[in-house]
Amino acid sequence: MPTRAPSMHGRHLADLTSSALDGLRPAGPIGLWPVGAVEPHGPHAPLGTDTLISTGICDRAAARLPELPIVVLPALPFGVTRCGSAFAGAVGITPETLRATVLDVAASLAEQGFRRLVIVNNHFEPEQVATLRDAASEAGVLYLDLVRRVNAERLTDEFRRGSCHAGRYETSLVLADRPGLIDEASRKRLRSVEVDMPAELAAGRTDFVAMGMDDAYCGAPAEATAAEGRATFEILTDMLVRLVREEA
Ligand SMILES: [Zn+2]
Image (cartoon, rainbow, N blue to C red; front, side, top):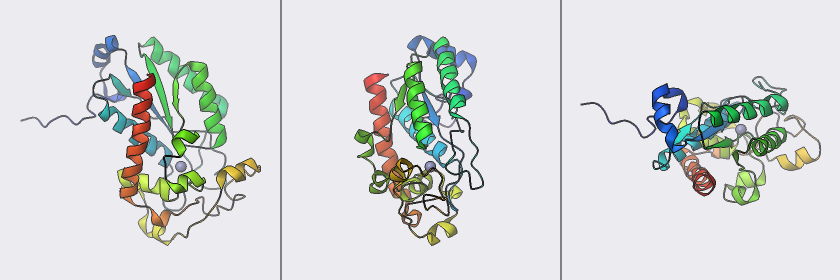
């Protein structure tokens, strides 16, 4: 007997055949687009942490919306990443490239019959967020804005304090979905580093070292747990599901 198809079967654009997508087009597919960055996340977490989180949210939302023609797009793994450039692994694109990519992909999806596109981003460097907000509005697509107060206040204390780069918040999310990617021996040794990133950025300090993040992280990665990550994923997924139901 064939095994039962997993709930995500047929939900990833890159996995579909042309005829399978054609079959979805009369319903007006809704694209969910995970967006992240390649940048240092402390000595313990993967460079692609932000992309991994965005993908986890989109996959969960797609599974929770079986009644809608949801299609998860291939993730955009590169973002505007300058804060971490003193460390190995900050591989980024310019705001102009990011904007052009969003506009081009949005136009192409519309031509292909998609009724809506929702950008799901978890790289919160100010240039990244500003570029995505502007490009989304220019392209007429939705942007799940996790740093907006109404969303941020539902997230963990560390996230709300803004001391959350590769700390307890993000590391928990990676532990929930890809525990094998966390260097556990390093993680457990890391002391907590309190940095108010929004305040540092507002004061004009735009690189991790100047902000006091000598190891490219802040927050408390040693306190991270998979259970917290799963709980946070549920909250993040709720936000996306609600946005899709209300506006897509
Ligand atoms: Zn991150």
